[in-house]
Length: 73
Image (cartoon, rainbow, N blue to C red):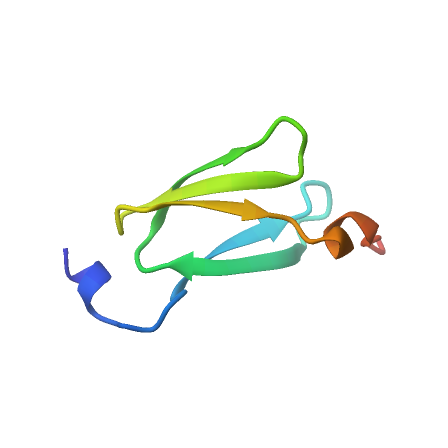
């Protein structure tokens, strides 16, 4: 209960993205006031939604740079 009332800073909790094969982090998205409980990706792969204990569902759209990024293994 206290997790969502301990800070007024926006985006204290982040969604972190990892490469499945080499287990390296390649992105973070801030926005929730509490822990994120669920994530769902749109079938076209251009956006995702996250739901957290703060009671909000946030819809995130990936920037064009996300699709141009090449991960060096």
